[in-house]
Image 1 (tube, helix red, strand yellow):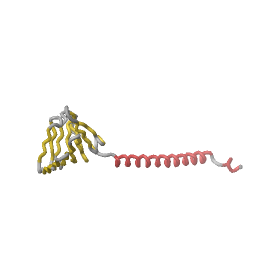
Image 2 (spheres, helix red, strand yellow):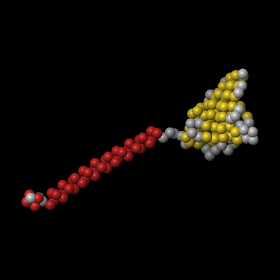
Image 3 (cartoon, helix red, strand yellow):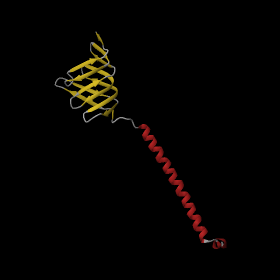
Image 4 (tube, one colour):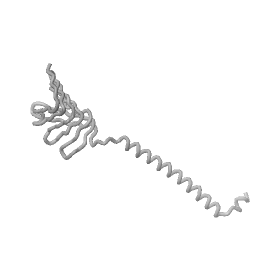
Length: 149
């Protein structure tokens, strides 16, 4: 018991200070390591798309054409690049392709990738298409193949 009375107060102070600093370094290094892991996981999971699974519609007096895709990127205020599994669907037909530029204001769509148009008695395979006049007119271009049943 007398041993504690002989210990120098400076030694006790510096020893306590050393233990506190070691403890704080360990805690902050673990926290910094966990923050880096969270950021890297978030960066890997973020797609390069502005819109995930976008859905739009082209409306005219007689029908609606619903447009879906896996990803979308804004090109301008009105134009959106739709990518991956782009599908145009109405009661009369479907069109499937991989990339489409859709104009929300004019309600037009253009594609320069392989496209497949399917309706009750018709299948059209083409290198692209242009939908205009609010979905009333569709032009297929490039190498096209028409199958009539």
